[in-house]
Image (cartoon, rainbow, N blue to C red; front, side, top):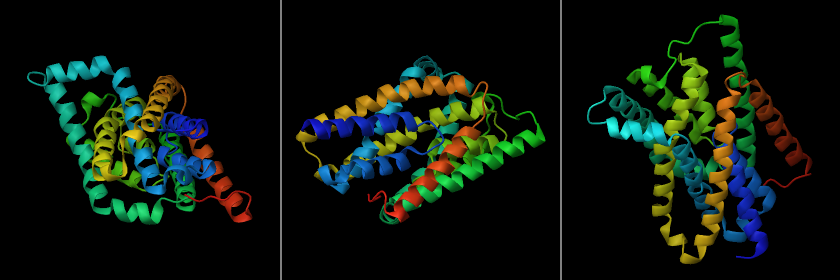
Amino acid sequence: MDIFLALKVLIMGLVEGFTEFLPISSTGHLILAGSLLDFTADIGREKAEVFEIAIQAGAIFAVCWEYRARIAAVLRGLPSDPKARKLVLNLIIAFMPAAILGLLFSKMIKEKLFAPLPVAIALIVGGFVILWVERRNRLRNSVARVDSVDDMTALDALKIGFAQAFALIPGTSRSGATIIGGMMFGLSRKAATEFSFFLAIPTLFAATIYSLYKDRALLSASDIPLFSIGTAAAFVSAFLCVRWLLRYISSHDFTAFAWYRIVFGLVVIVTGYAGWVSWVH
């Protein structure tokens, strides 16, 4: 692996980590970053898609490390603690819709929607959804029904699971769908964000393991440095992002992310149609 490819891999890993847990779509940003860097030309489109999914493991390790004490307590409490069992059951329930729909439609989604223009449209639409939800919450000025992930019901988890399924569309944002969906269904901003973090663990690990197994014929020992650099960069940047986001939501809403999505999506469309940037994935 030459130095220029290593630099591209590092950038892709940083993009994954910094965007995975923000409501701005890590998959969408990876598609756009890969297009700008001409990443697929270096390793091939199919391997690039596996890489983009596999390095999510770095971001998930960052969440596991940040919440290591809580995760350990839940695992220890499974035999005897009703709250621990309830949280795990809710995560399983929330995980299922995206898992089932992903298995059924992932091939079609990759063929039709893994491209810059659909990503830009999804970014813009998602931005307006966030603005609508935040405005609705301000006008209603209502107190959240669920203030902690421990207070969630199975129905709450199922609703968030279906919200997460929308993130199968690249550019939608898995974290955005689950956090904003959770807020729509009565969760506090903090509870929705934390449940989104916890739900990312089974969701993204499953996606990574499935992708590596399904496309194992594309990979070889020579790919280990490439995947290692990307995963390590994703871990460091995601860890920093998670800590920052937890502080941010204590005193801010998600309006700034909504406007970022809208402006970024419009920039992609305008620059693409004007011919200033060749957005090709």
